[in-house]
Image 1: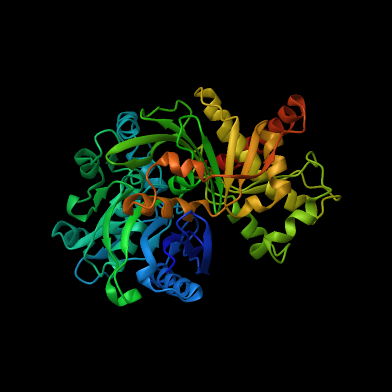
Image 2: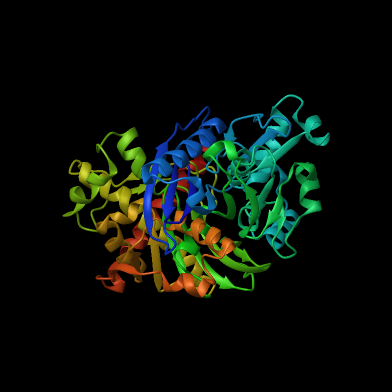
Length: 499
């Protein structure tokens, strides 16, 4: 019988299950979207039951689609939207409150009130992160403050906190296991990335009892087994990583200096820095790339909140397209310098600005502006924001000259051609663009012995198409200067409104 690796990819807008053969090639996949909830301005929530139920259905359906049994699955890996925060009862597994999504900005004021230079330095030195609503700690604090009796229950040891990986693991194991991996732990604002421990001082600052926290494991490890009732017999759970780290692994960026950029709901540019955590002077994040056999590999990361989500807004909000796939043909003849700029700061700006209060805008509209230019501006905003990250990395002495890309948007050749032009760098699209799920499968395969090393994994990566810059450095600089002006206008007008 053929053997497989099963990857769960639980994302911001959909859940997916992918079956890979033992050479890392995708054989079957099933995905399911679920509802996004926006109860207040800047708030983003998911129903936790939607996350679990959609994952379970996808896994069951992909096994049925491939006509295999759980006995043929060597191991399962989990990758997930990071920072999204859940708190649930240990006795029942029932959530206290909806999942507060990584994009959610409700704790902006709390973070601002807490922020002092001393605390900012302490957080940066210990976690590699910034004090921002993006990360999990302030979201946990909000739940404990706003759900009646939650703080008391937490102090009695009755509540569990987890990012989505931990929540899924809990349910996959019928409440037997409360664990996470080092990559997900490193995104909570509570984990010391140097000593690999939950930090007592940070727990005290945020008022979070240590009893709520999961055990932190390597990214390839014995996380547990699925409950036999779910798939007919237990499946070993052997891999776990946050989605951006999983994409880095799936893109085989195992050497220092190698970089990948994922264009999903948001955009995340991550560069491998090796065994040493490098601190950015330009508001990039220091994070754990992966931890294997107790050895930590670090990365520098820039995070953009709106990439594919911008196109989702173009389709569902403005209804300018029936689907995002129509965009490539529509913009084919739109020149780079068409005068319209869309700054997609719908939930604030991420790196390198970290402006939680910024809001989106379309600038440069004239009577001549049509749908094609607005759509082009939406697509280009992703490239311009990636340029922002590249410039920040350059200032830190870490310029990526070759960028491996993945995510739903990279099917669009126009987008990648513009990306290469605005970055002045080579952009490589792999044969297998399911890199996030692939990274989870690779980790599970490393744990169960299907793969022997990261060197073997690197040999499995193949480029499908390379995009090289086709404009001059002067043109590039002129375009980018106009983008910077557009961002400055958005931030200035927003600050005027707040004051």
